[in-house]
Length: 181
Ligand SMILES: [Mg+2]
Ligand SMILES: [Zn+2]
Image 1: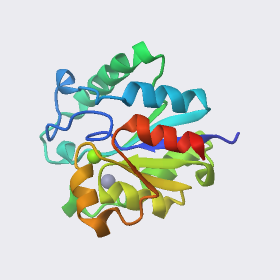
Image 2: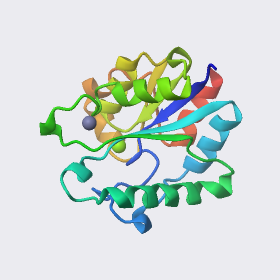
Image 3: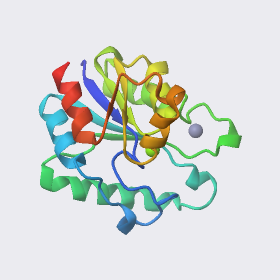
């Protein structure tokens, strides 16, 4: 089994980032996300969320509520006839110095192994430097920055977005770029 995927940061990339989102009703899709994911899915990309959720390790997000939050995300995507195929999450705090927190590539590598994903055919999309670096370290074909969430600040600080192969205003713009490759 050989699959290709688009790895997606969650907060600030797919949804509004209120900071330690811990209730399903706080999950609000950003504009263009449903359409962008639908376009990628139709071209055969698996959709994999790779997300640092240190709020769990900090005790700010009950681990049991994450499945509800992610069900809410799936419900919001349903009208676009698309769903996230897999979630790979890190619950650690930065000071835990774990193996999985982005910019480390482990979340991507673990998901790739579980789902039979060929990384050289896959992309990473996010709003922070740590997303771009994780995609590069994992050996993705490209890491792409979106100007939502922290994306504009990441871009402004030029060196921070240095490794991004493309910067788009919205997820649909980034998806369109991928589909032109
Ligand atoms: Mg983010
Ligand atoms: Zn971790």
